[in-house]
Figure 1: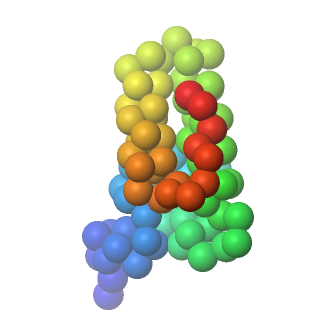
Figure 2: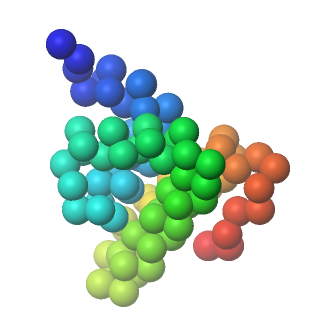
Length: 92
């Protein structure tokens, strides 16, 4: 049986990136690991993930949840540093 840590590792993404997918798509974390793996392997999947994180930031700011928006901005910066080499990251 796979553990949650196994699912995270198999996705190729970080826990914060998977959490952003779960939040954006309104799905359970375990299901987000599966979607995350699909995005990780898809040709433009990382662009889609980047947009999901940005949309989560905008939604958090709109509802006044500035602490969560800061957490998401950190996730986006980490994403840009580790995943977006050679791509131009969208401005925060």
